[in-house]
Image (cartoon, rainbow, N blue to C red; front, side, top):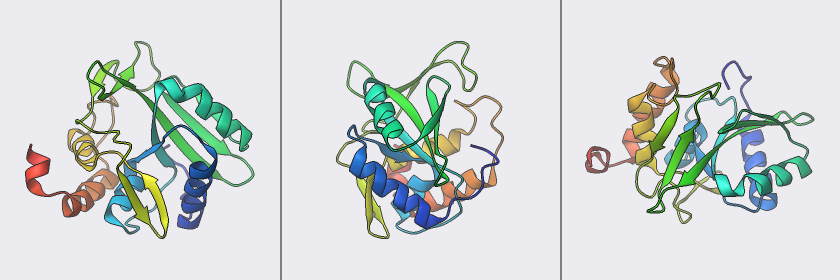
Length: 185
């Protein structure tokens, strides 16, 4: 969410603890907070928490978040959730599984945001066994190579997305945690 106020790291960690305890279907961090979890340290401020989930879990996740006091702006493949009394903010992107079981981002024609089509992710992007930890909070994370590729490709999925210093920063951090041979394969 562009223009959002920065979340205090303690708010991010409290939000992730709450989600881990009360949202039943799996969620995976992606985006800037995922980069920090993969690095094992805070590297920059964040305006929200980006999460991936499977499209089949959408209704259950929505019910769990509403029960926690979150309101939503649902734009289809991308949903923004805010908990008004706490300032907590999450953005959830719902992915589908293809015939091989790999995660695919599907952006429908006419979507307000994004380039319509089926956008493949790297194999194992949503591995339920991939976790990272930061300041004692453990949470699932999407594949680091997928995060790296998303930043390298820049505007491939979000039309009009300009090169952003945050993306360059994240690339540099990811390159410290991903061996070069993995980035190139």
